Image (tube, rainbow, N blue to C red):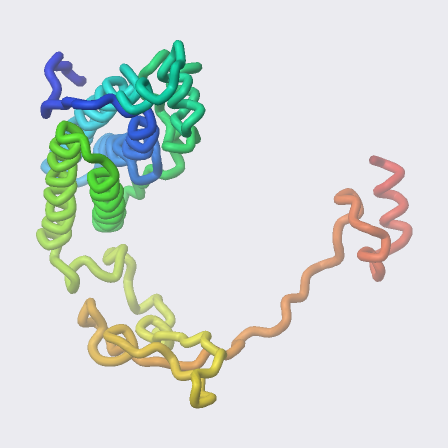
Length: 295
């Protein structure tokens, strides 16, 4: 059950309405880095959570807070659409400043579809895509997905902060950036509580590692063949190529890639799939004719 408070979580002010910035803010609402994504991601993870109740409760609380962030951004979009910039009004003798703004690059659907309000879409007008929502049922895997979502979300918010000179918008975005900082730390704290790098990995840690192919489970396979200036093609070297594995359960090694399997050998195409006759060479001609007769 959800409850609603009519007041915003944090103040949203716009000093100078800017329809073009409203278009940019749509990415923070309905884009792949946006608040609808993390809101639904945390809520679906919570609704399907099995195990300790505290993780479900935390995800529910966080997903619910993200609804408040969508509300803030939707309010910011609406406020930015309430008028065109003064410069536009002064320079263009137009009956409708928003039409002039649209011609200058603002989102026409803010005028045509929503009546000067936010949309469940990104900055290009592409509707939110539910396939971006990650809820695997594995707590550790979901926490990493959440860290990624908050990291890209914070990158987006900082770019939006840089893109505006409006003090009210900078203040709102500074709040959202701060919450993204907390979220990254929050999800990493869960991973630490679950056992950290050595306790959590490899994910899922419930699968017995003796069932893995031990020749390859800690081996970096180099597929590079383009030579460097000396004519060599050395593998990329780093923490991942030698020494103890991050989970402490193996040793990193490096090996040049080599084909270990044979050429694929697929059966001829089935006649009812209507491939070309030349592809069906070798099939039983009587069988092919009988299939075609029955189609």
